[in-house]
Image (cartoon, rainbow, N blue to C red; front, side, top):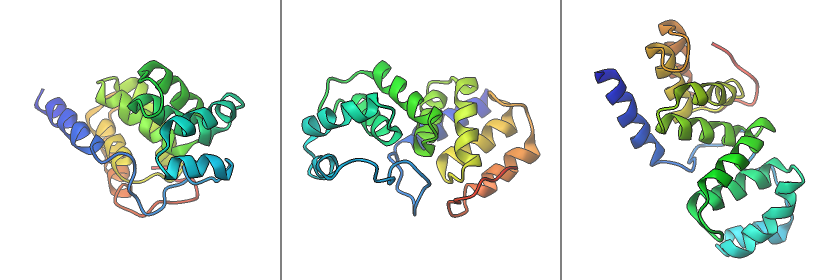
Length: 173
């Protein structure tokens, strides 16, 4: 019981540091697959314009647009807040290989106490080189057997990797 409380408090505290403030996480936030008009709208905080400009590329399967539009829906920036739509877009982006979407979606599910749903997304992000909070949480999940097979050695490995610089090449514990 105490372990679960610790884990939930850690998730809450760590989620306050999102969006990522890392040294250079892997794709998709900086893939530069969108046009200048879209990036300018985001940079200038013209959220309604950005949301409109992201709709078509997101519908066409652009994972960067899906991720950025998911953020708009999750926070109600430029669109009406719609958590279900945000999760749908995060899931599309995550399944399309967007590592930051994998990490964010895993953290979201873990924050909801849905560790089994969080696990595959956190693992995919960690194996793709993501470091920081999501990889640390993956390690805790392995150590405690929350949504993952209990494996303290693998948990320690991932928690150690969480403190390393992001990697571009796949890694496993």
